[in-house]
Image (cartoon, rainbow, N blue to C red; front, side):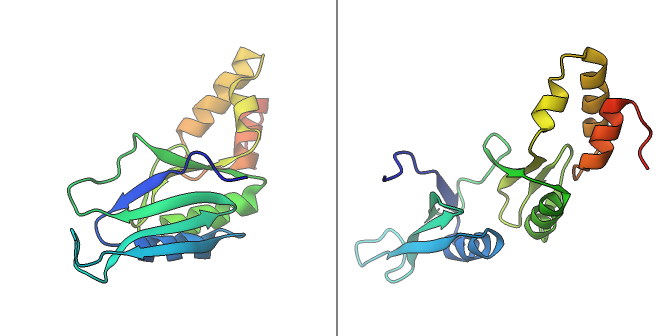
Length: 161
């Protein structure tokens, strides 16, 4: 089935470089198509206009549209990680050359925001026991990269080891 909604990511001139970087980070990923500007412009003929790519089966389009629009935290991509090894992997790869933020958030080297989160985090934060949920939230707010064991220990009211 063809994907009905395709996120478009606007870059200054680095769409192809960014797509190749993201493809190297995520398994089951590939470049689908590259479209180049022709003599009609608006970019220089032969330069990359768009790059269509898939990350773990999710289709994206990177557009080289110039410097007037940049990424902000208003839109981000979330990675649901099965375990701490996945959290560590994506955190290290995507934050390299970028900027680490609070609560599992980071900006990659292109300025795109990501949240690297363990699956099950929502259950801790929405626990029916309000004290357990509050302890998990407080622990998360004190972290940059999320630490699953520390979050669980905090939720359970047990000091982290």
